[in-house]
Image (cartoon, rainbow, N blue to C red; front, side, top):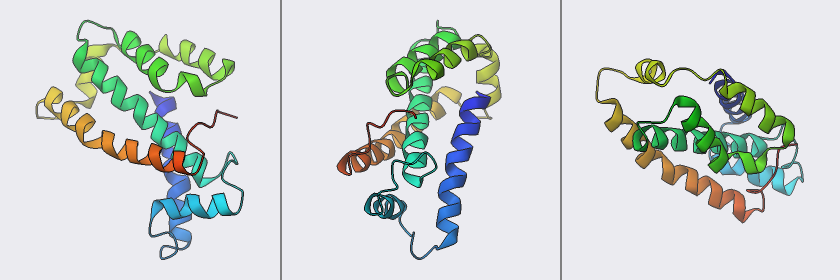
Length: 157
């Protein structure tokens, strides 16, 4: 999960740095994307658009992973991750990224250990369900916006 965490953190930092450079100009997240689309820099690997796109996709993966953990209590962590990856990220990755994911799955934590690490003091299954239900509409909104500017289907470069 360190790779996913690092990727998410990097994309958040990229968006946060852009926002803090001119908070009044970038009051709305999508204004960063609109500016890059206008300047024809949105497809660049270091663009905020790319950051938002991959952050959204990474969160799609996590939501799908959590759903798998709830719906398939008999699956191993590797099975849950692989299914989630296939449903969300695989179509956007080339051979190298897909191969790297396959290798990373051999290092996936034990399911019970993972659940123990992410659980707090409440009902972990209820918390996961609430997260998936609450967060999914935001991801859908991001996908709809990115599609409206023709950028939701970009592949990894």
